[in-house]
Length: 410
Image 1 (tube, one colour):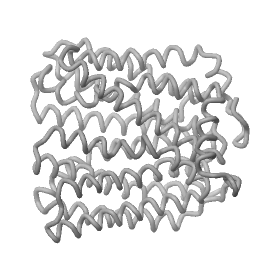
Image 2 (tube, rainbow, N blue to C red):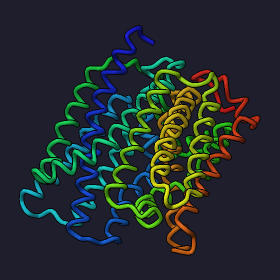
Image 3 (tube, rainbow, N blue to C red):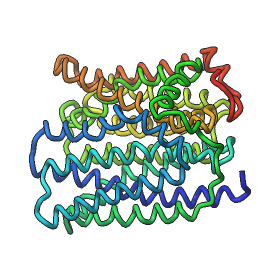
Image 4 (cartoon, rainbow, N blue to C red):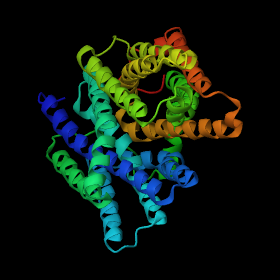
């Protein structure tokens, strides 16, 4: 690990901040365009699926490809490809040919680019940051995500109101260019050769699944997280209904909830950036999930005339969520050998993205038979269970201190 790793990390982090800003603005602009153009709940539901399907079906295969290439090449290629897709949509708008189908296709293709970008970026961080600082680096990422949650909707709405959707698309292309240039300038150490030359992508994808299955600690962590995340989809989808139907609020109240949630992510990221967590990363993550669980349980039983208590709990849940997420990501980065990063991280992302639609399907099947607050209560109970039972698990305790970066599944 070279001595100037902090400069390299912040160079990459700054470039990715621009990239994430552009992507967040485009996501907001396209969903808003579909809302204004169609006014269809079905179209919006399909647009959400367009962003999830590539990661669910193709995600593990992307990991095998990532492990064959330099992480730097994958990240820069993904950013560039997404920018090209955005340029194509700009052209369609200028020619008056942009329609619902074209926007859906763009959402699908952008999701494919992000499918390569996210695990590649996650596996790049350990090549820059020393293991003892990974949790703090994860905290910086949570700060970035929280800032985007607050800034992007406001900036996107302002840009669309003053200019047009095309203006937002141009900004995305510019921010992608900044991300590629800064990443190209960053000095990132070379990882060990990733895979055997004669091994097929399918075989390497299978190897990623088998690595997760054969590692008792990793499989336990991933499995319990996947179960706990089943109710995240319904809870997040019904947040606006919780505000309007249960607490009698409107768009102003919903904006308060959204903004405070984003500020909570920033606060949690700052805490992790300064503190770094307990020595055992999974214990820190358990602490975060336990706090999030308590906050959501209180949301589920909160009287409907306590809106500001709801806002405070949403803020608190985001703080603990950032702590849990940053620590968990740091565990994955330090526990999994570098040569498996692409494959394993893609498998983890696939499992994470699969649990969300399963919860949404369950919510659609039961309809109005389950009260809205119940989804938040269920989500809280499952995350509190992570906070309680992870520190008690032998698999968790044996996982840390973590094995060598070139170790085998424990």
